[in-house]
Length: 314
Image (cartoon, rainbow, N blue to C red; front, side):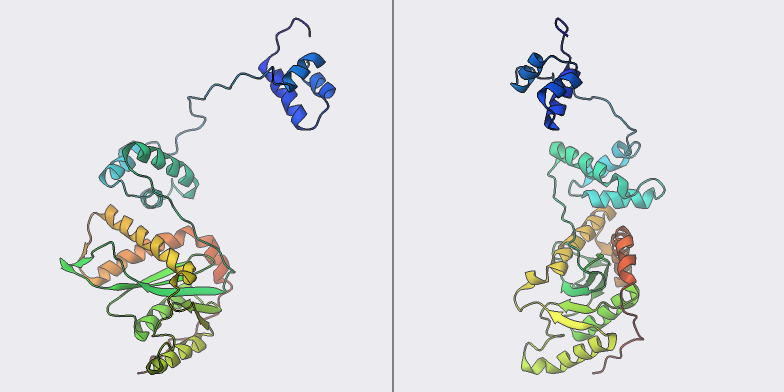
């Protein structure tokens, strides 16, 4: 090989062989090099030239026809829109074309756009648990959004139930406080919609559920009757330690961001009635549940069957 130019391909082949544990003589022979040239490569005296950067596509752009035409105008109208929101938009409007397979592409494209035009935001993902074991619920306020009904401010809170393993969820609009009636109605609706009851139901230290004060004992008895009726073991996190209920506290934030994003996309925070508002929330929840369908089907098979409605006595 004396007198012949050593190619980058030979250098790379020799280096690859050495990385795999080949002896210098064997690696040199494999790359058609002399032992002297192989020693120079080992010493770093010969290195392959850097590969030129590719400036062409290796596949068709999956966002062709919608990125500049639809998604960029939406981002320009509200740079706080998240990738998950725009993926929902594409899946809703082009169900036969888009699904989760473009999620990473869309995230990268939006991140690159926001570097130039606006701040990017991080996305957090759910934690997993044993299927069929744990359901969680809590009440939460939509603090960063002012919902109005026919122009009038609507004071309310949301009952949020979630299966810890699959992430399947249910959300109900609640007028008034965190009462036992609100807890019972929300929980039963969630159990019926999910088609079964988990082995354990965990809440924060709600006075409607747990005996935090002696005079609340009657409410506690009703909650235990409710759980016993559905074959559920009641549990709670320590008082004043809401972060211990992280499998529902963190999804509170995720859901409220999704709802706020959907409201931004809708372009209005006003609804004609509470029923219309609940229907809008049901649509957001439906999209969340559609994304975790396979895990929910796995979990649903392990849920306990639910009996008829539990009668709330006074």
